[in-house]
Length: 186
Image 1 (cartoon, rainbow, N blue to C red):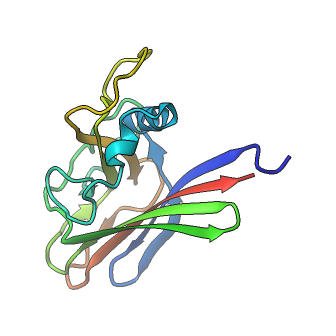
Image 2 (cartoon, rainbow, N blue to C red):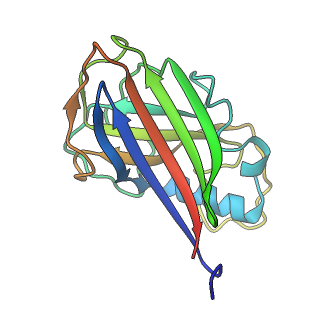
């Protein structure tokens, strides 16, 4: 029967003066999976939301990060990029949309202006703010919900996983990354 299943997918598209790759798969890590559990339980995530302050890049806001590692494959227990670049995106946006009947999307986009980030990109990470303790050990009975809040590593895309080919940033052009989270009824 149609509508009895919901398919969740995440994909990443990257531009750096030209399209580098489109809709590449990525890997949701343990903290991302726990965030989905908290959302299903109605505890902690809905109050602040994953997109908390995403359009205002900063140390405490939900954000994307780039990294240089090209040899470490993603494992579920990862809590950070292996070799993150400290440069925070210059701008960011989040758009919620209905793509088609039964297909909904959250699109997070981050832009690093020309000459603001350099080096070889071998990994990318999506970090989201959550009030729930996404680093808690499961099982967790009767979660209490909103806490002080922190940034958690939700998903990773990497050259080591063959998700994309590592690339040297063209510093004459902006680097733009769009991370999509799609929900589709099936």
